Length: 165
Image (cartoon, helix red, strand yellow):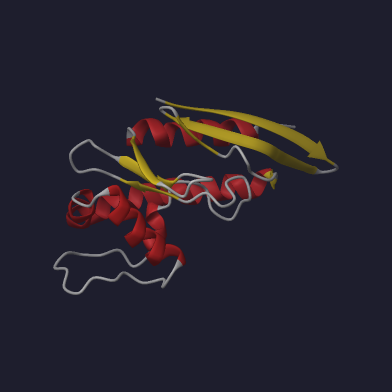
């Protein structure tokens, strides 16, 4: 199950999202974030949703990733997104996406999820999962998620914050 809470404020002509906490099961993200401007967040949610849809184009690569443990997945994706910026596979005979950021599970370029790294790997067998680093302990963990439910939650967040005046 996914859910969210948010708090917002208005400063002059700008609407700020002061806090956005999302839950996936009993795991939460966003508790220690810094406010961000509404339009920035809406733009980043759109990118997130587009990226999640793009995963469908790489079914064989998703099967490859699905076979990895949470620790392996986190290491591969963290390095590709924020480390070397490249995939590090010797010989992989499947189509590999050029942009590893399509696996990022939280809106980027906002401070709401500052320091939180999480990756969503869509499953080819209904077991989609979010692999993340626990804030404070740096332990790698994962939580199963229904992709449709997760995407719909972000659409609801976008709708709710777009209506704030």
